[in-house]
Image (cartoon, rainbow, N blue to C red):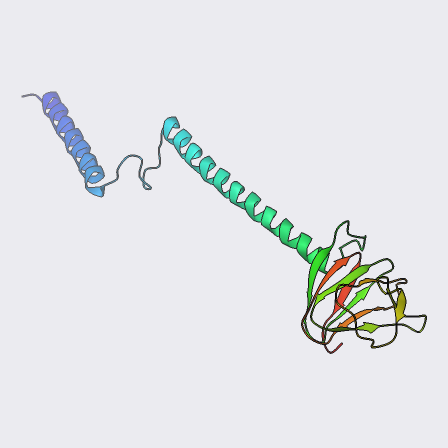
Length: 181
């Protein structure tokens, strides 16, 4: 054998050893194509993942919309019980539960009917609460008669004070003052 053949054989052998070493190293590392260690993915895989995530986003949006509708319903109830966020007159009567010791202070034009419990009139120096059913002005601390239509003529602090837990129906703007205030 001549020197040239020996050199080519030796270089070919070294090349095979190097390729074998590299292949063994890659095989021994356990890297699977498409895994976290080898993140090369196909377009169809990305499209599938995007479809899955979009479906999840759509489900979350639907749940968010349902929750927002419930929040809006609850806010409407709170606004009714607090006399309306804009203090505008309500178009219909709403039920208000007034705990013992609390007061409902109406604004001009507010209509109130005591349905259950006991309450007394809160008046101002300018006058009392109009009992439209009886056709008279209620004096300070006068007992309110159930099922009588009461009207607050002026926004000056007039209203009702609950002596027991009371249920009222109210149309118009009002605020509730908790017991002890």
